[in-house]
Image 1 (cartoon, rainbow, N blue to C red):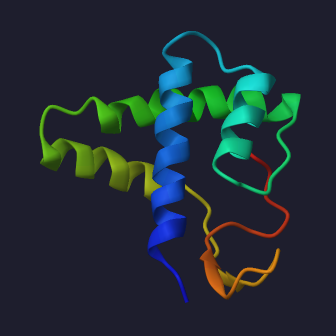
Image 2: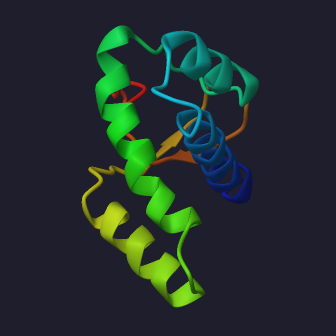
Length: 108
């Protein structure tokens, strides 16, 4: 089962969304393009934009931390507030891999 690709992809999506947010509020087109670029099989909607903009602002504290210790503390705070349900998934001709969201989760 593959773990690292999933975690790396999540970090790459977060970084891309944060970078896009630095240019202004996230648009549906920007979010959709980012999810597609990273092969995330979730459909973003306009309802996802407000919470994604808030999340992007919160993640800035991780990427902008002065020290690794501060980045880890900020990331741990975000993780503690994130509803995650680890599960093993098999889809799209992929082997078993880890997902950490509920099956009904939205892009946000």
